[in-house]
Length: 247
Length: 219
Image (tube, rainbow over all chains, first blue to last red; front, side, top):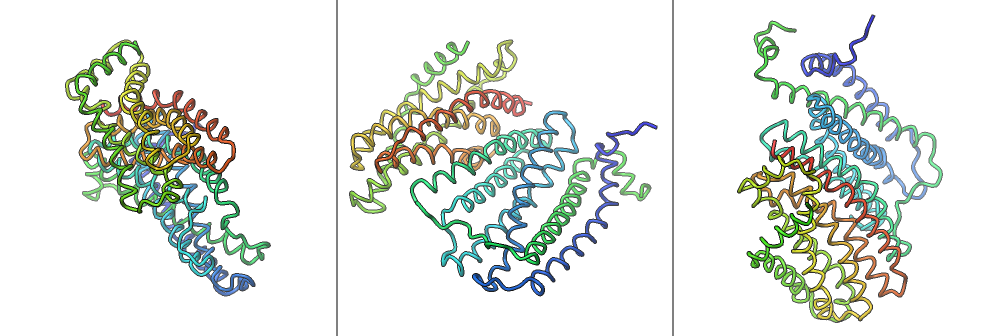
């Protein structure tokens, strides 16, 4: 039996696959979220240096990780769409961008809340903070470029170019910011990492990142379905769907 | 072929000198505004001189990006260039070089004079000028990608700033870093090496990416 690897590269079949997958990932999100939050609030011990304020890491760290992963994944799919001219990959890339931007914003926001009691300031021009901010700008650039172009295929390709240029720049920005900071600030405030993380803290954080992954997948699938419907609205299968012929 | 494009673009720029001067005066005015805004204290000005000059150079270079392709696009020349058998990347390289000659070089030449206004030492002036000399071609190269992507879009000017400014950040950091390292009495060679590396990488990739973007934009 030969497997058709490209079956789900068609927006029409992916639409139904995504529809079937969403419930599973939603359930997984809820389970991981409840387990993670339980560990975060009840079973993880209070940090002896930072008190209760450290508990923000259960949101902050997964959000920061997700914002970076999602950018790379977005650039990957956008690049695939550009190289192989596959419509679905570009649609998924555009579906990822808002979730990624949301996580980048969340990481910055929760970081500011943590910074105020810990560092005594909402914001410092630390290497990590600055590069996360730039990552947020890159998402905004990607989305606003796509929003400004009316022709969806041109929007996909233009977005892909800027996403790929951005992904080349991400490591450069990350390191340049690091060098810039260490150069003329000396021992600046570095991201304080709890010296030895208790197992409960670590597991809480990992479970919360799983929840963040699942949430991101659900959101991307839902948004891809909407994008597919919008772009394919003139096709036969969508009108059949509308008339209730297809299930 | 590159020479031909450069010659043509320079000729066009010379016929419309006001465009070139506008960019230069924008740069001068922005740099001159800062002492008025933050106060004329010499110590503070010396500290922020490199940053101010560099940020003004980024803005000036970015504002002139719109002109890189738009007039050729409007009169159909760009379409002929896309159809021509010559490699589009080479044509784009020529246009980028002439953009740098028209906007980058005047900024580099003007920077020492503005630096004097900020009471910089001679060594810092030299380093500032050299860092701009290495950095401004990168601005033109990266900016060309943004200009090609936003070609013919509504609100292209604002959009290009959102796309391009985050990508300018490494250049800004190392350009100002070199000046600050030299005023602090440390070596600035490392900064120059990295600026040079960024320049080489963008010379390799930018014409290619710009050509791809132009093809996308022209459909």
